[in-house]
Amino acid sequence: MLPRFLAPTLDPDTGVAVLPPDESHHLTRVLRIAAGDEVAVFDGRGHEFRARVLKAGRDMVRLALLAPIAAIPNPTVPLTLVHAVLKGAKMDDVVRDAAMMGVARVEPIVTARTGVKRASSSKLAERWRRVAIASAKQCRRATVPEVVAARSLETWLSSPKPAVSLLLVEPSAAAGDETSLRALQARETPASAAVMIGPEGGWAPEERKAAVAAGCLPVTLGWLTLRADVVALAAVAALSVVWGDTQS
Image (cartoon, rainbow, N blue to C red; front, side):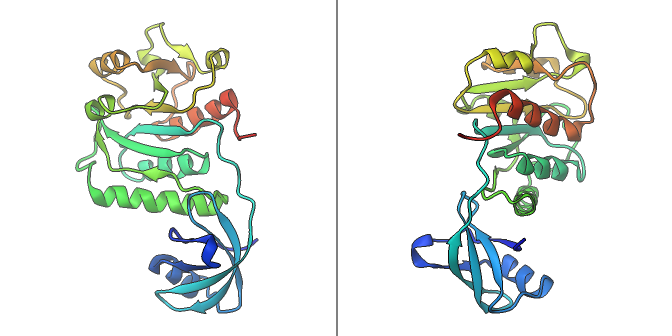
């Protein structure tokens, strides 16, 4: 299996690709790959090629594109994960799993019960983007999900949203009016969707009310209480079954 590298500026028409400094360093200093060796290179937008290293410098690696590599299909429904920022490395795990499961976009949010200071830091957003890239490389996904800086739930609710927005409700806060993910199979498959997951302390009552007023549909995974850092993985996996996991 060829080692994979991300080249965001890759242009198939030129027949060559140039790796950015961080990827160049990984190729030359970590994996010790040299000129003449073959690797795989992708642009993060769905294109991937088998390539040969032409020049291997510490800060710049130049590759000759040899042949396209069939990319793993994206999920049928482009899914945005809207997730309350979690403490410590838990949010890294959420982003890693989201990229692995084919999520198209990750939008961290700050809620009433978010227990993270400076959750909107640009440094945090950049770290999450690096996590998403590493996960896409590892799982052989050719598309890297977009990861944006955290913003408030109120701001997110007032912004343009996908065709369907699902508000995941924890079992202890269920009011009896939630829809199960299984029941979504009876509905028309949406052109796009978002799944919203709250913090470790759950949604505040006023947040649920505001989300429903903004058109979000309350849903539940069932009656088991899951760890905050694995809820997204379970929800995305379930939705991939409901809507079909790949394009035809």
